[in-house]
Amino acid sequence: MLTYLQLIRRLEIPLSFRRELLKLLRLSVPEACVQLQEYAGCVLKFRKQHHAKSENYATRRILWGREYDAFLQKRRAEGLCDKTAKTAAHRDFRKAHSYSDSGAKNLPGHSGSSIRRYHRAFLNCKKS
Image 1 (cartoon, rainbow, N blue to C red):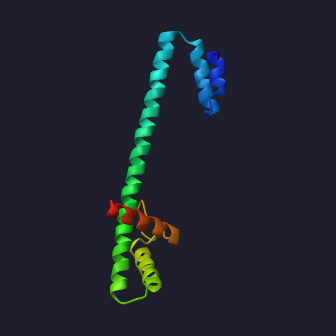
Image 2: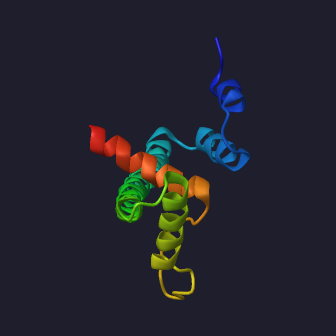
Image 3: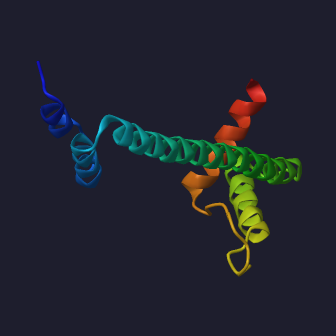
């Protein structure tokens, strides 16, 4: 059977956090419980913020995909072949989200792979 000390050493967590856990072993039980509650509160706060950030990015990805899809459909309606329509839609998208807007935050990526990812997220959302 493992002791607390052996268990803490085997944990795959950062060394600084392991040191904090080892300090808890020296505290009395009530003091250790207070410290653990503080750590748990920090972890829960981090998880909540991380989840919100992920959700916000997923929402923006779908919105950017919708916008690119509108540009693409407009170019296809003009009678352009598929490859030319995608290139023109890509150009329109980059123009709509220029990096020269100095104060703008959360700008989408302009690479082809980023735009494909946004478009795929929008199409998957549209299917479901």
